[in-house]
Image (cartoon, rainbow, N blue to C red; front, side, top):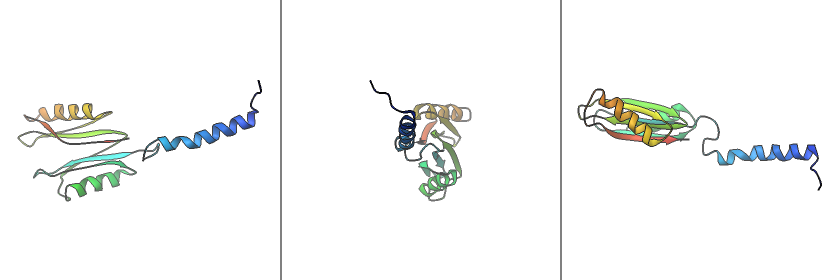
Length: 124
């Protein structure tokens, strides 16, 4: 059995290393930003897979028609905002949608009743 010379092995490892970002998703291995937003009159917006926090914030605001008063950003995770019947709200940032929604509802219920998820997004 023939062995691969060390130089060729190093070259192969280098080439495979550069090919890896193809499977990393739209944002690569850097921060992949997202945002969720709500407004006082029922407006909502969201953003996911953005290269910067500012881009995620602006995209979520555009979805609200720039009428959102609460905008929460996150990266490489999921975010959700739950709203109560009295207007109280809660935000959750977790590793998946279900946990983010659950966290948002739990925080919302500290100050309100009948909390339900208004908006969610995941960015990875």
